[in-house]
Amino acid sequence: MKQWKTGEVAKLINVTKRTLQNWLHQKKIPQPQKDENGYYIWTEMDIKTAQSYLQRLKATTRYRIRGLDR
Image 1 (cartoon, one colour):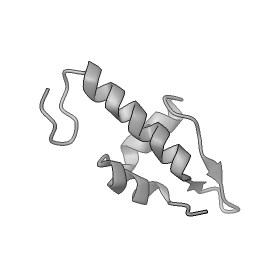
Image 2 (cartoon, helix red, strand yellow):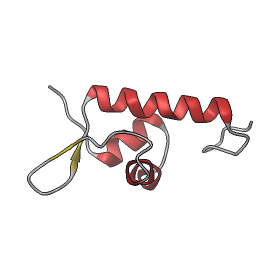
Image 3 (cartoon, helix red, strand yellow):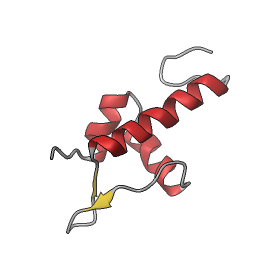
Image 4 (cartoon, one colour):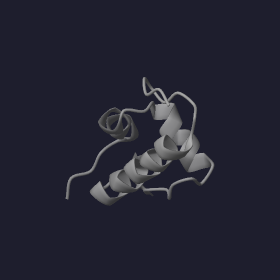
């Protein structure tokens, strides 16, 4: 099963690494498993969850999200 690091996931869904970390800290999305060093290991399902949350934000916010004007 393919696994990704937080920075890689951020690039995939077009947000910053810090944004993903904030969502995790604020419990906006569930935390992925961690490796032996304490780093998050993202699965395909974790990425889909983050993408879904981002889509909900885009649909409900009037703020600018990385180049997206609403």
